[in-house]
Amino acid sequence: MPEEKNLENVKPDETLDVMGETCPIPEAMAHKKLNKMKAGQVLEVYTDHAAAVENSFPSMLNKLNYPYCVTKTGPGEFTIKIKKTS
Amino acid sequence: MNPYFLEYAIVGIAGLIFGAALERGRMCFVLATNNIIMAKDTKILEGILWAFGISVLAFGIIESLGIVPIQAAVAGVFPSGWYDLVGALLFGFGIGLCGACMSGLIFRAGSGFTQNWMQLFGILVGTIFFAFLIFPLTNFLYWILHTVPWLALKGGLYDYMPHEWFGNAIWGPFVVALIFGGFFWALGLYLTKKRFAKISKERGEQYKEPIISWNMLKFKDAFSPRLGGLLFAVVAVIVFLTSYFTVHKAAYMGVTTPYGSFDAYILAPFINLFTTVGHYKASFLPKISSNWFQIVPVAIPMTLLVIATFAGATTTAILGGEFKWRVPKRKIMFLQNFIGGILTGVGARIALGCNIGTLWSGFLMFSWAGLLFLPTLVLGMYLALKFQQAIW
Amino acid sequence: MAAPKRKNHNWCGITLVALYGLFSIYASFFLAYLNNGKIIGKLSNEAIVGIKEAFIMWGVIFIIGAILLMIREYVLKSGRKEAKDTESGVSPHY
View 1 (cartoon, rainbow over the protein chains, first blue to last red):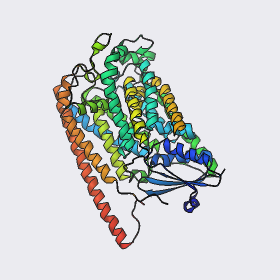
View 2 (cartoon, rainbow over the protein chains, first blue to last red; view 1 turned 30 degrees about the horizontal axis):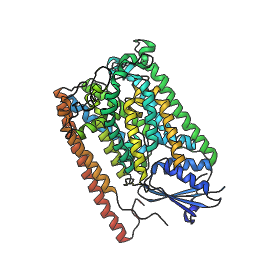
View 3 (cartoon, rainbow over the protein chains, first blue to last red; view 1 turned 60 degrees about the horizontal axis):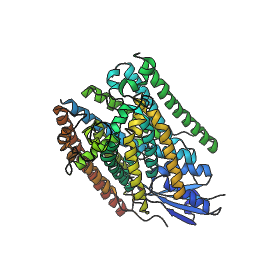
View 4 (cartoon, helix red, strand yellow; view 1 turned 60 degrees about the vertical axis):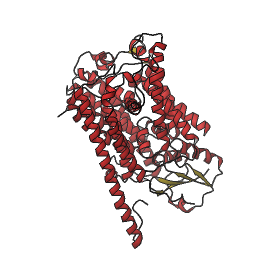
């Protein structure tokens, strides 16, 4: 599933703050949180782990087939919005 | 000019390149392994395979052409044996807990991850623990030098595959390099092709990632891991050739022993490192040395390389606008990283090196060390990942 | 909702680069002393002198590098202010 830019303005149902954490914590925690959520909800993740945003998150979300959207909120800081589709 | 000065001056430049390659290419073994296990993504692994493949091929050519004679190349080959397996398991679990390998640690810490500074502190403490307790009490050096032959190989020519397989043939190193390096590089190229084909199919258009682009050179984009791998190989070749042509002592890449040197520099003003602290007399085995600091080199080119790598990683992080002082919300992570760091340090010392010094350089030396290190390293990282998925 | 606005941390990084330089100069003082107690791997005097000089040289280079980064930061900072004053655009990082 490629990135979806129209997620950018969607209000998230859940947020996850993993600032300062290194891999595999951000992906693992996001995965756990997504498992607990209902289909159709949107999760917002705050992270400052560039390598996770470039590699781990896209590959994990591709595998799960969830649309997502990455916004760079500052140098080395990112917000990822993920929609749980199923 | 003093040849040692020249060697260290050039090695410093290599270190800066190494730091840039690490930080920009996100070259981390833990990241690569986690991505494969969690999402079957091979992007970072491709970079590591490029690094291994190209450098091994280059070393084979250099040694076969006699640019660096085999006698000089084998002088730096470590003995390898059971301790590689044991150390790699501890090391793998430690780096898995911290989320950064011995080289990944440098770029993480360099770009401001406080957790990885904690890991570094753990490694320094773990090395002291090893040096004053484990090393003398178990008489570690004795076991390495005198274990029964099928458990350990002697260093030098005994652990040099081209010599074992082809005797003194000049083409020996090249053939061995072709086998290992060719395998790594071919696997890397294959994985890239497979990944591109998969993404192309999903998106319905031809998908390709450039190896190098203008934005990468301007530090706007992260390097492709394959470019990182290529730079790794360049650094290893620079260090190898420089050290041979300046001081006639070939040096292989390594980052573990430099941490030991850092310990020595930090402790030097406070305690006498060569006294009988933790003396061998506690051991029932013959005397070799009383603590590890007596046998660690006071400075190897890699010591400066590691400092320069830190500087290179921090500089590119600042230039790329990615430097940030990152403090985790959950303070327990510091404890996890400290414990992980101790395991990393002790494991790396037991295996005589880390993922760079034993795994990568093991292949560059054409010794068995790399092959012995790999399986338990992956097992350790896998266990650590499962452990973390279970508790967090 | 957006992540809180962050402070500029580059000064931390620049301090780190300077500290690497100071550490390598600091380390150079102990090379000769630490070489005395070696059982294995003793270096010649020539080696100690050469290594010491190289450590000091690189230490100085890192400190100069930190100063250059500091100047770059200052230039960028003043550039950012101007951009804000004229409302001509956002800072290049964002």
